[in-house]
Length: 291
Image (cartoon, rainbow, N blue to C red; front, top):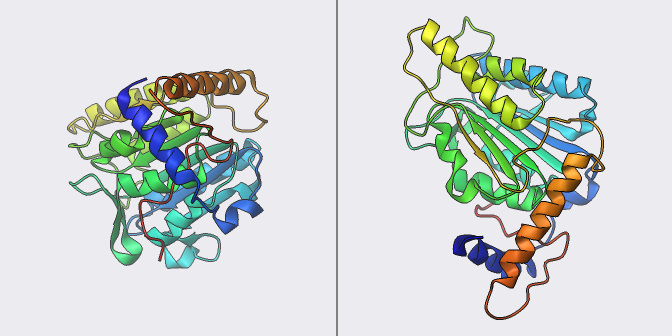
């Protein structure tokens, strides 16, 4: 365990005493996956197409519809989805309270590595997303998928906690492709949706999706976008089991590994003893202001 992680853990302990749970968290279903699906722009239909398709897939795999929170930038879809504006997106993620989290964001991306939200002409930064995840998902297994140009920035820095798996559609300095009006999905989203039906683990999801994207880009003579991934050491082998409970053997093994890792890091601190509670560890005040 590096000094960087020891410092993070110590900081989280100090901040935990002032943490007040988000009001929605107490009302949320604590069992199973909690899912946030956000389409950041409606100028092309590909983004909403992807969130609708993934939502339907998850329901088919046993995720309760009440656990799936879909956000859209299309005014015509606001009856079935929440507005994809930054304050709503961050509050929704910060209010999650499941045993696993899945966040899927699809839109355009900026050259600075931020995620574009067209509704109010805003951008979501990796630091802002990391703050919301710390509140809503804490140390539970968390999968974050950011499908946008230059989205590789979301696979490092404040985002790389040991309980997280992060997949991005492109390197931090590369665009991704397929956001056209005549397509159903972007290249990355199309590959991802197909792979999710058959891949046994999230590592397999990444490997097969990246291979599919490479093939599609070669066929259309595009510069390789080079999708990126981060696999936190606690849950790097997490299988794509959507339904079910935390009794799954892989979940139990990974949870024990994370506990051992954290205990080792705490014991390495020269002075003092940190007693993180189950609801406190990995939760800190947001890095953003919720307006």
